[in-house]
Amino acid sequence: MKITINGEAKELRDGLSITELLVVENVEMPEMVSVQLNDEFLKQDEYAATIVKEGDDINFLYFMGGGA
Amino acid sequence: MRDFSDEELERYSRHIILEDVGIEGQEKILNSKVLIIGAGGLGSPVALYLAAAGVGEIGIVDGDVVDLSNLQRQVIHTTSEVGTAKVISAKRKMEAINPNIKVTVYQTMLDASNILEIVKGYDFIIDGTDNFSAKFLINDACIIANKPYSHGGILRFGGQTMTIKPHESACYACVFDSPPPANAIPTCSSAGILGAVAGMLGTIQATEALKVIVGVGEPLYNRLLSFDAKAMSFRNINFKKNPKCRVCGGEGIKELRDYEAVVCEMKR
Ligand SMILES: [Zn+2]
Figure 1: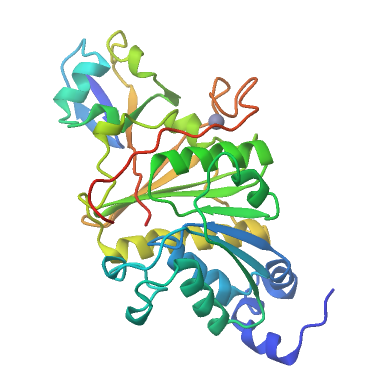
Figure 2 (figure 1 turned 120 degrees about the vertical axis):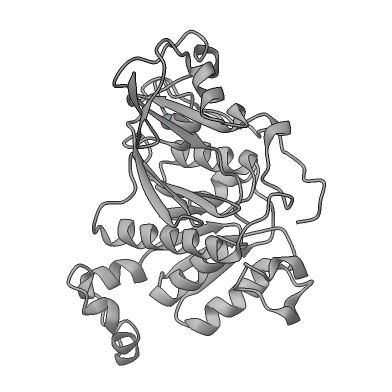
C-alpha cells in the first residue's frame, strides 16, 4: 500500500489502523501529535477504528508548547 | 493621509520604497496596535522588529523578571538587567530603537479574568508564551474578541507557526483541539531550545503581523508552517477551518475558562 506521511511517499502493509501506524512510524508520544487524514483531523478515540487506505495523505502535527 | 516628518521619511525609507508597502503601508503600520504576549524567546525578536518597523502602539505582557538563563535566547534583555521585570527591560530597548512609538507594559500573567480586557485594545496579537494553557487561552480569547493573531511554538531545534483570522481561517483548536495531557509535555526547560531557533520563529511572527497590518501577501491562514532547523527543512501543512471545532465551529465557545496549568519543576 502506498501512502504519504508528512509529505513523503511510503510503502506500508495493508490494513494498518492509525494506532498501529503511529507505532510503525516510531511516534514516541502519540499524545503529542495531532493526526490529519486527507484534510480531516482525527480525534484520539478514532485512531483504533480508522484503517489506512491506499493513497491516503497523512500528517503528524506535533504539539510545540515552547516560546519563552 | 498623515504628514510624515523628514525623520520618519528617512527612518522608514526602506519600507516606503518597497512597492508592496509604500507610504500608505507605512502609515498603516504607524496607526497599528499590536499586543505581544510573552517577553521571552519569541517575544524578544517580535518586540524589537515591530518597534523598529514603527508599529504605533505596542503592548507587552509578562509577569516574570529577567533570569540569567534567559539571556541565551531572549535577546531584548541584557546581563545588567537580570532581576528586572521583563516588560520594563523590553520597553527600554523598544523605545531606544524607536522613540516615536508608544509602549504599554502589563506586568502580569494573563488568565481568563483579564485577557479579554487587555486584548480588546489591539488590532493584532502575538502568542509568544511557553505553555499550552496560555496558548489555548489566547486562541479562545482572540476568537471571542475577533482579533487576528499569530500562534507560535518552539521546541529544541523545531518551530511552528500559523496565523489566525477568527471565524474565517482555521484556529489553533481546529488543528490541536485541546492541550495534551500534562505528563506528556516536554515544553519546560528540560526540553531545551537552540536560542537562534526562537529568533527564526519570532521574526516569522513579526513578518506575519506586518503583512496583516499592511494587507500584503498571503498570511499563514489555513496552514501551519513547521520547520526543523537541524535539517533546515520547512514545510507547510494545509487544512481548513473545522466546522465542528470546539472553539470556533458551530456554537463555539462563549465564555473563557482557564486551562489546567502545567507547572515546570525546573526553573526556566
Ligand atoms: Zn477552530
